[in-house]
Amino acid sequence: MKTMHRLLAGVSAGVLALGLVCSTAQADDSQPVVVASTNFTEQLILANIYADVLEARGVSVKKRLNLGSREVVFPALQSGEIDVLPEYSGALLGFLTNGQSEAHKQEDVLAELRNTLPQGLVALKASSAQDKDGLVVTPATADKYQLETISDLQPVAGQLTLGGPPETKTRYVGVPGLKKIYDVQFKNFRSLDAGGPLTQSALQSGAIDVARMFTTQGVISDRGWILLKDDKNLVPAQNIVPVAREAALTPKIRKALNAVAKALTTQGLQRMNQRVSVEHADPETVASAWVKQHDLGQ
Image 1 (cartoon, one colour):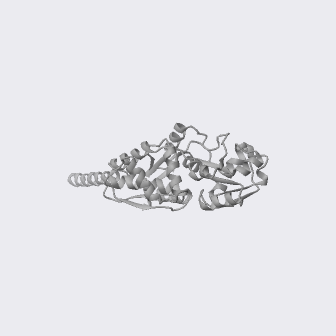
Image 2 (cartoon, rainbow, N blue to C red):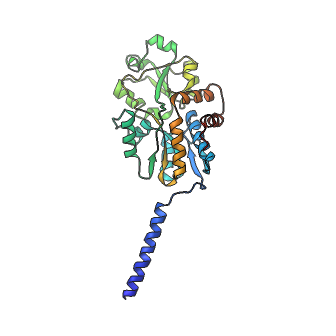
Image 3 (cartoon, rainbow, N blue to C red):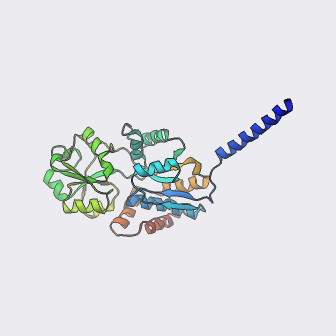
């Protein structure tokens, strides 16, 4: 009987050891890591940068780009359908906390984000580069209503139409936050795209009066549009940060993505966005040129 107990104990220990090996094992660099993006220009650029740097360093990569909004893509990251996603610290924290976070400074936002991420997901090194949601108007609209800040919209918003991606209606930094923080309520909202050609065309033509765009979009300065100052800090720090499944990460993958974070700047992001949205360059080509320029393929 004692012999049988010893045998069973030995088998149990072996199974436990095997389980520990399996539970702590991570994908090796020969296994494809799935790099994904949401559905706007900057995301396509960033995801291609991640993919290029990883591949140049010997990591097998599969790209799944332009999948939709965060409401679609983040659950895919949680379920393991994708492995790495370029994210924005404050926007993701707002998404995870349903707009309840009060963090605004870069370090506070990142700390709370890391504590809030679902189990199994990690935020890697954040870049100094930031891209925030912003409200943009034409010079004609700014002159007509004397607009410089978002606060200036309060007495006139009831006459104006806001346009942007569908999630603007529900995200805290969109319609709900504008009402709560600024007491700004627009006459109408038009569901368009995330600062893309639909939104740009609607603003240019006057089909909308105010556009929800991104602060790093080159088209804003190229067309002489006015970015309204977020004078009450509705939008928190929005540092670019790769968010990934911890089980899919290897030391080589971490090192590669951290190198991207170190090299990326807001100015560089603006220039790449301009190359794609204004000069009509291919996002993959722009990303590849940036990787080569910063010698990140090693």
